[in-house]
Length: 180
Image (cartoon, rainbow, N blue to C red; front, side, top):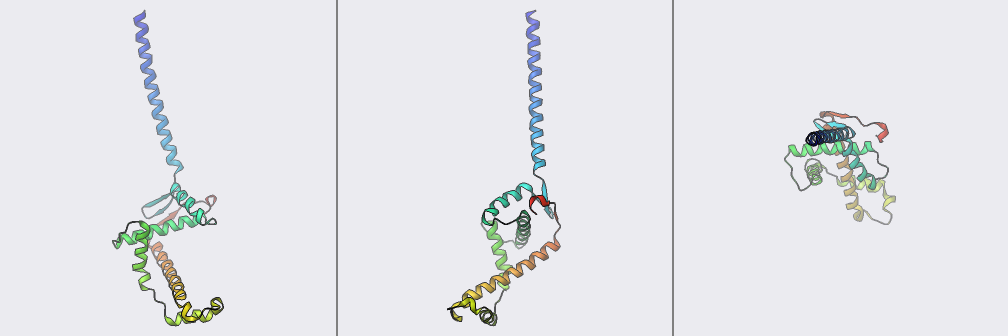
């Protein structure tokens, strides 16, 4: 009787190990599946996906600097970044960071073609002379030139991004409840 008892005890132990192994596996698989469901794709830029966790990561760091920014604004910035980096890659631009790659691309493809004329600078000074109280034209010249250059650069960058967006397949699944 003792032998039969030991055999059934070993059999019961083996069954228990199998049961625990299967239960552990199911818990692991179920946990992984639900984690995947929580991190949904909220946008596509051609074949590149942007997930909820990507957006939340960028949003949480951006909202510290710009408290009134929406998730939709951050998502738009992420899309613009993908498009610019893709274009920079086409031109084989390389740098230490992605930000440096984008700056280099913008400098080469947009800023290099921005020209502010002396007439534009003088016209701006005359139209906004009240803002330059106590500052003559010569002293304000560099500041005005820098401002007008940045303004034109931003306008050209926006135009380029519009063109890139028209050529790309972009699908956004961001819902209003997320601030988009």
